Amino acid sequence: MKSGSKKDEGGCVKCGTCNTVCPVYLTTGNEVHTPRGKQHLGSRLHKGERSAHYADIFSKCLLCGACLEVCPRSLDTPQLVVDVRSEPSKISGLSFFKYVSRKALVHPLLFSSLSKVGTTAHNLLGGFLPKESGLRLRLLGFEKGVLQLPAVSYLTKVKNDLSAEKEQQVEKHTPEKQVHEVNYFTGCLANHLQPEIAESTQFLTSKTTGSKACVPLEQTCCGMAAMAAGRPDETLDLAKRNIRVFEENELPILTSCSSCYYQLKTYNELFADDPEWQGRARNFTERLQEFSTFFLRKFSESKELITGSNKSSGMKVFYHDPCHLRFKLHITEEPRQLLSLFQGIDLQELEGGPQCCGQGGLFQVAHPDLALQVWERLMEGYGALSANTVVTACSGCLLQWQLGLETGESNGEAKHLAVFIAQLMQ
Ligand code: SF4
Ligand code: SF4
Image 1 (cartoon, rainbow, N blue to C red):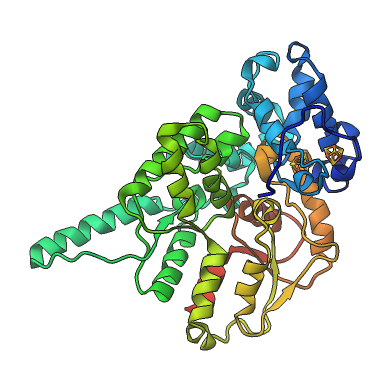
Image 2 (cartoon, rainbow, N blue to C red):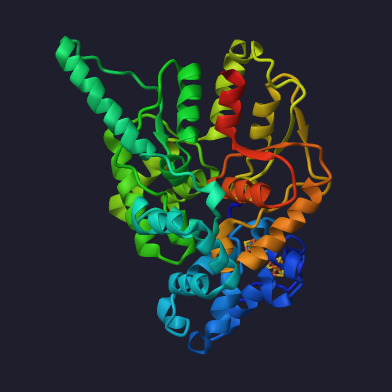
């Protein structure tokens, strides 16, 4: 995270540097969508003057962090956007969450996606996903083929397996305490929709540490979607629950989702002014382990684990940088180095460097048409590559790629980094 970032206090010098990197502005070419424009509105417009049009402008942000990265005044436009979104009574009485929900219901593109998903979406949104899961919002615009529901969530399966194990131990009078090296925070995608991500992470953890990760069963959504929707109270509640749950031991906390990792890291700042939770939040964030960094270290220490695998030879792979890792945490080399440990992988890059996929900050839900345009800009670069496997570690980016490759004209399949590596090793 860029240190010293701050909110605008009339500090924007209108230099326009941020405009050159904002994916929304680069797509629409409309000054009103620039970070500079948001800074201007945020600092100049009296709250009483804020309208639905104002809400619409602040909904057009991916919270990607590209603008903060280049701003010479370190102005934190994404934070300004989140702050504005959490002002329910000040945007013509309409909270951002209600605004997004309403938009989702009336938007023709999104409506057609929903009708294609049909009962699956209904089941997902109405019953299958817990109410606190950020996936409820994220999934509004996704199509049927991507939504293959597992019979039970990953956490439910772990719970069932543990019960069965306990029964066996009691029967055989051989109580056995499993030793773990790390905890695992699954994130909503790996828990509810694609448990193969969790299984693959456990496979890799087992290979590199000698035991599976401990999975605290009461863990919940990281709060990223609640934060993006401008629901600070819900964000804090989810954070407290996770902090409490992971206090059952002192082990490091590994997560397979880049966006979850970023959001979990913010817990330290969320409770900076709360004496009761400050220390507990700091302890939690200090234990977090980013997926690619963790496994790069583990595999570098035990190269013999991968030297036997020659499945990777000649594979043409494109690694997609999640914005939260790229701009906010500057973790771009580790995933590439991790992939490069596997023999003969042809790791390909976009000519102009990494690009946003259009899935951040609930943007894809509020503005599916614009998200599609951001995606198509990315496809122009991707189409020039010969890669046929896309690898990423962010749940939102992964869903965007899976949907895009399934329904669009570009070739290839998208896999989570954990799934990709586990398949190479099995
Ligand atoms: S966070 Fe990203 S999308 Fe939002 S204003 Fe900044 S550059 Fe644009
Ligand atoms: S880069 Fe910073 S100072 Fe320059 S226009 Fe953008 S927000 Fe303002």
